[in-house]
Length: 132
Image 1 (cartoon, rainbow, N blue to C red):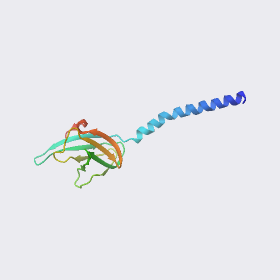
Image 2 (image 1 turned 180 degrees about the vertical axis):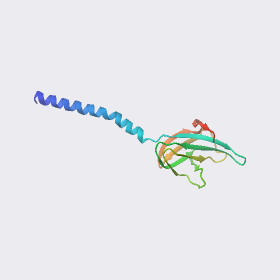
Image 3 (image 1 turned 135 degrees about the vertical axis):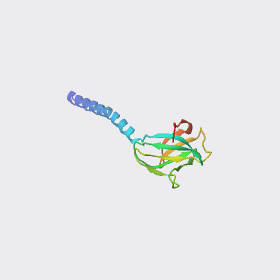
Image 4 (image 1 turned 120 degrees about the vertical axis):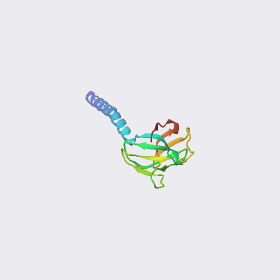
């Protein structure tokens, strides 16, 4: 192998390595944009007839196609009039879920799902409390 061929091979290898290194930040950015982020809050409501805790999903950066939430392994109902455990939540919107009366435990695990994929896990006590 002549010295010119060796130099050409070294330059090509270095160029390939530098290109690969340059793609690492782009790949990391792409991965971070794929992940949905949102606020998960808890609220307590007291009315004349009722007293309950709820969980609020607020402002997801992307739509959550099949959103469902489990509380200590049990699926929670969304707060609308229909009895449903799974719902589409659009980007930058939100929804509320209701806990059964007396089911509130501070150490309970809250898990948010998008279909079969877990997108967030937290303990109920770790959720910020907001006014309804």
